[in-house]
Figure 1: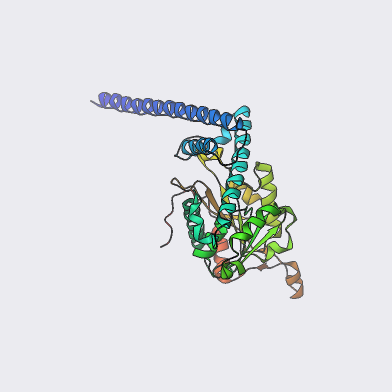
Figure 2: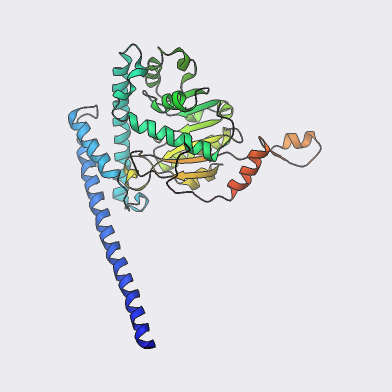
Length: 346
């Protein structure tokens, strides 16, 4: 009987192993089929004579997004060299098309007496509402305290929906400095707030390369880093390192990333790069619904202030915003990457 029981257990173990192997093979087949489909769409998009909004352009990008958004086992970091090159080209094509789409709708909205009353005309407006709600909820949970008074958005573009939604719905007392390297994009963005005196007074649009913004960074409570600022991994790493060098201790950083097949649409940001840039990573959130971008919440920790120590005749001391932040900083030092579907605070 004991021998029979042992054989039965061995058989059950083998069945489980076989089932896992079958599931792995099916998963691999699904991944290969998805990557093949995306590569075909990338080739078709690359052949388009223009990426400006048109029925053909819209149809191809809709098909691409539809393919990339569902959860999948794709790990874009494990792709071979040729597929990595295809992915890099595709992300740049997506960035160019997104810029043209936003410029088109910014011009369309500017024709209204009050453009802000018509933002829902933008086809992906609901995505920005959900993304802003997600980011604000994650910030409130992981960086508690007074609401931010000064916010910077890096890579705001001609249609700064993130800043507009955050300012109107979540941070009604905060001032926003929107940075973009393109002066024409900023001119378009300014037109959208011209009819709203209250919101316009809280919105500034600054034309600058992020690498040239230094002292101003220390004045912001929160800095948002758009997904397409620094599209290559090394470019993103340099941007994050620059922010870590110039942001104030305790300043929060919100970084947009991507996960799974969505990494064919936007750059994937490794949380370790955020840590190497001088930040504590507090949360990493990968949505599975309509919101495409992943969100990383980080904060610059307290720093050694030698001048303060010397003034008081002591060794180096830690300068922290408050006791609450001190406790959080210690806790966050031990936090591992958080990857879960979190419920937003009601």
